[in-house]
Every structure is written in structure tokens, then in C-alpha cells.
Amino acid sequence: MRKAVQDATELERRLAATEVTEEGVWFRNLMLGILKSALRDYDSVEIGVQRQPYLAAWGARNLLELRVITTYVLRSEDDALAFKDDLVADLKEFWEAMTRSSEIVHKMLVAEMRAMAEGEPEPLKSALLVKATETERSGPDLRGPLEEVDTYRKLMNEFGIDPKRRPMRTGKIAASVNQSEMFDPRFKANSKLVHPTALSIASTIMPNSLDALLPLTSSEAGSDFLAILSAIKGHVDTYGMAPKPQSVGG
Image (cartoon, rainbow, N blue to C red):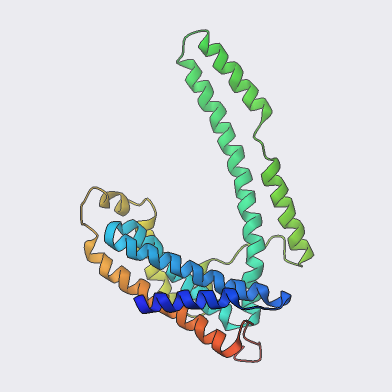
């Protein structure tokens, strides 16, 4: 695995240093981004296995997702372009969520200020209620998020992307490349530790309760890392920095 990490690091440098046409930058950067992410996530697994099972599971789940994404984007130019379009949809969805979150948090803040005021003596109570009313009237500052949402909506229109498009979930990507049998149970198992589940919470007060899991987590993460590295290296050796042509196994 140390050799594999060295090879991936060298391939990363090779991709970054390779000059490509303006039209081809996006695909080179997509492969480069996947490789960088894989290196980061495998590092998380190695650190997590030694110190924190949560971190190991987080890195392992990410590598699993990167593995199916790599298979998908290298399968054909159409699939790579579809994933590319997901970036704009992702950004629009992100800023829409930030806008809604800001609105909800603002309402909660006003309610908390009023609840706090009820337990305070005068004149602090009145001051807090006045401030709560002022905060409510001013509303959340949504200028930045709304501008971002508008920007990406316009980009989707310019690129001919359906404005209602939602980024494809990795479970669906796994199904599209016939990897659901491998992906689904492993994704669920790692998610049980990544999210605040009854299991992950209980593990924090049960020392060494997940130790038996860590060798398997490390092994599976290593397998995913090697698969990602092999796929990208094989693609670059065969097709260079361009997507696989549709006529080749498309």
C-alpha cells in the first residue's frame, strides 16, 4: 500500500503537469480531483485505524463512493459529461439549502431570544424582547446565497441543463455500473459509524468495541484505493487526458 500511495502521488503530479486543450481541462481535472480525494481519504483511513474508528469509516465510505464514481466517469464520454453537469446542479442545490437553512436558523434564533427574555428580570427582559423584534424584522441576510443560486440557475440555462436536475446519488451510480451488490452493504455498514446512530454513539463509551472491524475496514479501503488508481492509470495510458470515446465499448 505504501508503494500504491507513492504511485498515486506520482500520477497526481503527472496529471497536474500535463498540458491539455481548453476543451479538455474539465476531464483532466475530474481525474485529478478523484485521485486527490482518494489520497486524502486513504490517509484518513490509515490515521483512523490507529486512533479513531469513526475517521476510518468516514475515509472508507468515501473511497467506496469514489470507486463507483471512477468506474462511471471512465466508462464513456457521455457518463463523464453527465457527472460534469452534476457539478453545477450540486452548487445550485448547495446554495438553495444554505438559503433555507439561514431562514430556519433565523426564526429559531428569534424564538430562543424571546424564550430567554421570559426568564430575565426587567429591564433586561424588555431589552431582549426589543432586540428579538428588531432581529425578526431585519430578517436573515440572504443576499450572498440568493446571488449564488441565481448564478448557477443561469449557468444551467446557458449549458442547457435541466433546471430541475438533481445530482445522481452514488447508490444510483453504483447500480448503473453494476456494482450495487458490492456497494450497498458496505455503504450501509460504514454509514452506521459515520452518522450519529445508536451504534456509533454506544461505541464512544465502549472502549475497543470496534477493534475487530478495523482490519476489515483497512483492507476494503485499500482495495478501493487500488481499484481507483488502477482505473485512472489504465485510462491515461490508453486514452490520455480525454474521456473514452463513445465508439469504444460505449
